[in-house]
Length: 286
Image (cartoon, rainbow, N blue to C red):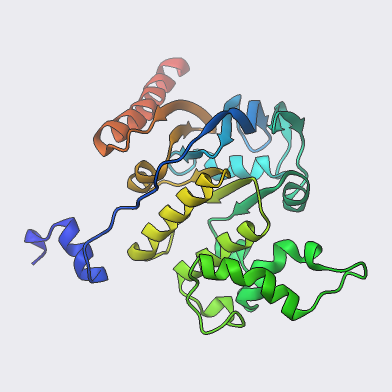
């Protein structure tokens, strides 16, 4: 009977064991090294005076309600839309990223879309090809050719590291579970050896057991020195994983919250920023 069912009991019945909280380990954030920075950034997508910085080894989380402009900010950084004011700096140097190809090959930035089936993966192709797609240029010889064995040798270590469950690397990605598809999405950027990884809704459509694994993997990636920018409206997930939280509302950064990983205090601080802006809006209009 649901009347007597706790959240913990419900989850244990779903996955066959007690829910395990992700262990992200101890990491060092190098605040002296800024990898990605928005300097009074305004865009044609609607952003206004966005200011903040992402540091080496940091997990920075963008939180906001639907329509706050979080995903649009990630796309603006990667060249979608037009920068109408301010600038983006990568490792301290002002730059204009043209597209995803430019982001990867010139700035070592990776991006995992919230819609992995439409934008992140080629579902009819194999696990091997999907992971290797970001490193085909590196694998090719002077004629632009490379063999399947060379491709397999390059991607196999990442498939093993992420524990992708499949009969072989020849398995079509479309036949995998949501969790394993997301592992493939992450693996292709690890293979590309990116310095900055932007992840939009990291665990949407993923089972609870794999969700914890993805959280720990993100912590491991940040521990290796990669700067991780995460976007999600899943507040418990954010509080479990983030080092620092930026609150977005109406395409602006309206607050910052240092994450102490306690739901009561962090959720109250986040909603306080949002409610303060919403309360101020009618007064400004008058």
